[in-house]
Length: 348
Length: 203
Image 1 (spheres, rainbow over the protein chains, first blue to last red):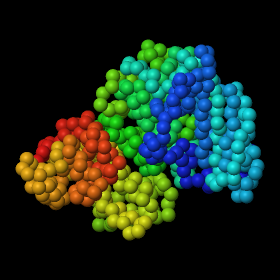
Image 2: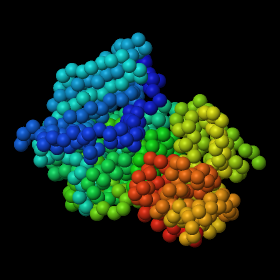
Image 3: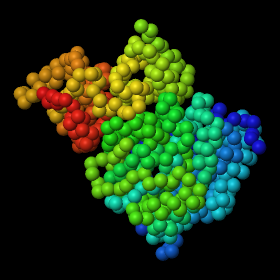
Image 4: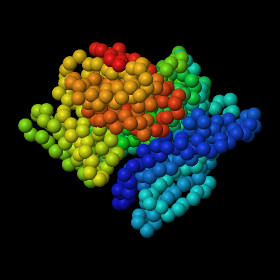
């Protein structure tokens, strides 16, 4: 049942578009002492998706959290998407989910309480699907509403997947199509087609659980999930953390239906320009690259796909496996090379 | 000629850009188009969009109201389509001006500073205008906040001349946070821009 209250009326920026600009955050974090500990395997220095802490020779703990304002109108779908997005950070590190806690901001005096019930039910669905358990949470009175999860997972210490593991020669695979930010923005101004928008919601609800299992099955050690910084922002973080240059073939990047037409009509969210500022001095864009396509590569994703490097001889097989389990747009979109001047080279 | 005015005040992002794009598409001649917006981010994004697509914008600000005036690009590429990043702004052979020092010439620094000022002032009026102004080595210091030349660079940028600033050089001087004009760029882009230009002028 769709709730009558439209959550999208509460926000101008939703989902990962609500992220603080990366440059601003870096300026603040620079002044803090970076914690070190012999068991801390992955910290904030490589812009990874979660912290990883070794418990013993067989087990490392993965901890992450993510929450944001509504990206869609109904509570159930918002709950599912916010949960899928938060759980994804564990999958992006190659792990499996153990427990999760709800993080909720909700204005009880301004939105019917049933909407909160729907949001939490949507979240619970996804945590269960990920084979995890919700063990509690924290709710404050807040406007606009916000929802997300703090998630705990585990991974074998030798099978952690990070931004820093790329090596020259690896093929780069993307599991989900790009364009969720554009479809949500297009919906808000009444330009997105209903069917395209529904497919975008479905893509955001889809867990990266099976994608993570396939990464492990193919021995992947370098990967991330695509969220607020867009494909190129996250690709740049991986290239820099790994000391390689990534070449992305724009024409091979899978797009959600309708995303390109929206971009062509000028539906370019402010966050795309922010992401362009973030990547452009370390990115070489080929002359003649289509402008709308270039901007879509910077589209902030909510609950985006996994993006990982795999041995080139196994890449096609990995893509086939991904397609078989439901990531129907999975594709090889580029490759890693020896480090050159730019972090990224985007070709047509 | 009919000069369209797009009133995008009060519209949320990305509506102002959608309306701008629509106006470009609907224009039947190359009369200037004016877009009105009331928030700075929308204004900046529209300016960036126009610049990236080879169109020259002039913005006037009145409090929190911005008026962006530009002429539709009537080159061979219809609407944005393929990026016009390296394309010359006019039909003539393009050229690039490259400054590797914050003073022009090898004379005394005082003279060099005077020549730099003269050069940047004159560039505003030169026709055809260069497609790019490249700043590297100590040339990047011209663009830092408080430089007497930053305003002149801003004017050149508003006239559609892309100001490319060498990122490595800016990092060397530790001035990245103090640059608010031009685009910080890399060696590959800087070389390609110069390679693609008909001429490079290095005064």
